[in-house]
Length: 594
Ligand code: GCU
Image (tube, rainbow, N blue to C red; front, side, top):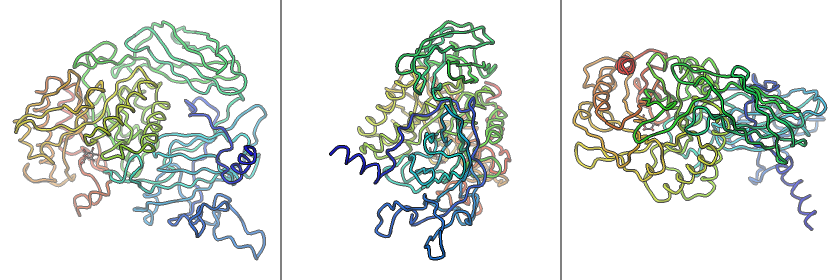
């Protein structure tokens, strides 16, 4: 009876076939084949490539990439004569037709891959916004929810030497129970927004590892390595040639081994972002990575980097491509955005409100910029929905899995501006403990709200603060809350003996729009906000960081004001054409002094 059910399951929903392994850490040091470039696409607002007219999933959908075999054959789609879209890239900025489009687009890529014996093959996606159903040669190989974290599927058994077709159904429709939920203040760029590649590994390979300094230590490296495959008991050597380190361990029956050793390493910091080549060598595989070593902790209201107090003078960044708009995805995009942050005098960036692409993190590592990385638990999420929690927890796990070896990342944030309730607190507490179970070395935070206890006193006493290492707080004194001068009269208090990062403040200005400092939307008004904000911030005794909103103007469907916003949030210090506004120089001057 059980066998009959299993066979039925395999026929009805082929998704359960290949047991998929978790995220492959560090794809950089591996043999890969890029699948970037032009993909054939079908825009499918009614999802007729997935459902039949009874709205039942069809097992003869577009994922079959069917072709008429005779003149009588009825096939009502054809990828190969359909329009193409660039991958990586959002669809919204590639075609005017798709600018506001939220729905399903089917992507198809054909490729040949003569596979060598004793190797395995995976298809890796940097991200797909929002829900991806993935098929190879007509078979479902997996699905992924969440638009900003990577995922991979094994295709070893399904791939053929020639004539493979990879089909991905990408659906960016917003849902109440999703993460993020229906309402956000950023453009819902859809598509295969980051790189897609094939990864070839030996039959047993180095699947994942954590090589970082132990919490609070500046000499002790502590971590683990994990193999995947048949031959799990192996000798694995971790080497840092430049530091004369070579540490050999034996993996157990699960392919797992802890790694622990003392090392006299040059520590990574914004002033000197020292990166070491680290080699993890097993008997059947070898992977190389570029890793920096630094310690990050808090002590009372101080944040300590390598044991010394540090002030995080930063800025928020959305993953909006500089100058061309649309979802940023490349190393060049990252270098431009982080280059502007450096020019501002920043040693820190808050990557809002979702994990950005890996180039951003690797460039921050290389350039010496500390990173706050966040999952899109944004505004009013369905706190009591178990599936919503599982989704958020999964995105958190994937964010940490990808970036846990990056020295630049010092803060994991689990939420932004979420309304107080018991259900919300439980939801976020559970996320925080999940993050701490995956990574003991970094600081936990969230961007919280504050309230007035009287006309001139702001209080930070959100119960969530209890569970955080660093308090994040968003305030818009001078924009949503009064006029710029109001900041002069304000005092800040906190219920917690913890460091505060003012994670958002600022206001809108259209570049080149000038007038008196009292006129909204002018550069002078924004400049005035920053002048009064900085004076107020300097007076907050437990302030240890700032990340004003925001480095560049970014697209938002919530900002329609003609000739001013035109669907851009104009709170950037730099316009969407790369022009610096007056407020940029006000902040730069302060940061240069710090
Ligand atoms: C909020 C929010 C941002 C938003 C900003 C704004 O605080 O966190 O995502 O864009 O305010 O209103 O401009």
